[in-house]
Image (cartoon, rainbow, N blue to C red; front, top):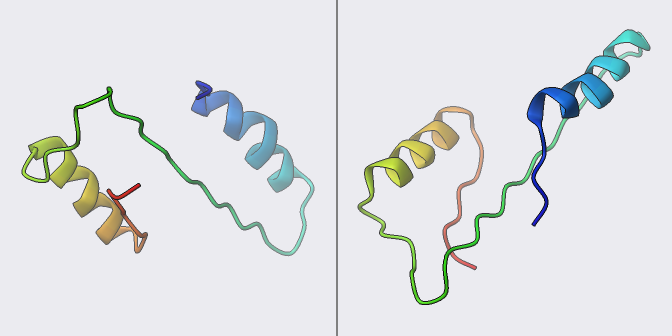
Length: 66
């Protein structure tokens, strides 16, 4: 997995695209979270529940299965 600085990501791509003054801009992001071997995700974990709710409110899919 590669760590990405979100500010740099938006500065280099989204900000640049907006300055091009095109008709529209569509952004798509995907996050893959890898767990430690033998340690799965607890579906009752409050952090995981908050992430799932945020995705729901944003109209995005949230899948905890591999």
